[in-house]
Image 1 (cartoon, rainbow, N blue to C red):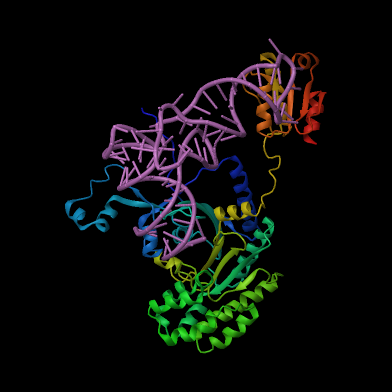
Image 2: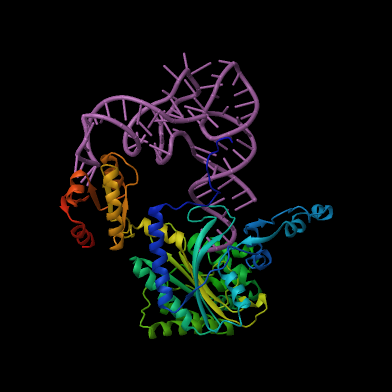
Length: 457
RNA sequence: GUGAUUGUAGCUCAGCUGGUUAGAGCGCUGGUUUGUGGCACCAGAGGUCGCCGGUUCGAACCCGGUCUUUCACCCCA
């Protein structure tokens, strides 16, 4: 065996103890919030049948799926004709499983498979990694975690209001004060397209319009022309694209007039207003909430509300997003189930909290006391103390090797252990132990009971 | 998928127009200190210069390929 340099696949990461402590802080905060709002946890397998995944994320999405090679003689099924036909013919013969691309589609699959056991509305959350084979870059990885919460089986806009409330709760818990929840509605986008006389070109309109804050009005208009929008259409869109920032109220007034002749558009607007009023009933103000009719988001399956959360002042993309999808389970044979959901991007939240220095100081979540010993006899006695500490609920460990006391202290110091309990010949004879506070440097000689109460304090 | 970019010790990085034995800081190991960590001083270990190939008398340095890093585009958490 030749030596090989250890490495991990592109775009994937290890998480060390410090990172894990911080990630768990994020997970715990989000999980507590989901539970507080009545969501139940679900997990689905890392792999799904490829047929479950393909065609759900558009052509681009299919390209980004990680496919898993069939086990056994995976070439057996590939014959000459298939091989000559090319990838599209060969792929299904080679691979029938793939890694999940998001949590929403597996959830939809789950709902359909278990429709008879589920009582609707069904509220679940799911926190698991997903995989995408795109090129990694800032804040984008090939393996990353999503924390999804979805409700299916109701079209009540209370769900939308609650999603906003949950986002606010989570962000408040993190101490984030400068962020905004962008809210839009797919029907408003449809209405805008309709008013512009480009009813069939919603998708193109969305992709272009969504980039407004990123590339500016002129380049959006350029792109619209490129995609075949007429002069008149772009002219009609002008007041929407105007850079001047409107307040939520101003947007509502503007849209009421702008969408007056569009039935869908007006419906969308009504939905937004209803979400806002439910939010008020929940006792939530509209701080952090930005009406953003230009927000489109990529995924094409949204049919109602659309959310996206951006944190200001850090170069990280959106940290959370979601929306309502009216017919997600339709492709799996269960029509007319409306759902709404959203997702926190843990990895991006991590970057945000890190950049803003918002992680709490690592509290004493590690070992509280380490037992150090001067020899084999002392170590034996230390084992008894070790067990006693643990019975008392004190996180304790023993230095496992017979080593110089200096080395043992060094270990405790590196690991930020608060106390070291020392056992030497003297302590052994007296039935005591030396307890040293590693921060203050103070040391006292105590009985086991005294040490326990000191450590519990 | 397109266009750039990065790779030298465990980590962060020097390394001149190609020249003989590739360096620093931090960390690590040992010692000053056989009952005490952090601080200081001393000593030491540690590198196929990402990998493969090419040019050259000679390559960490130049060229090609490949992997990886980072960034923009597309798209997206």
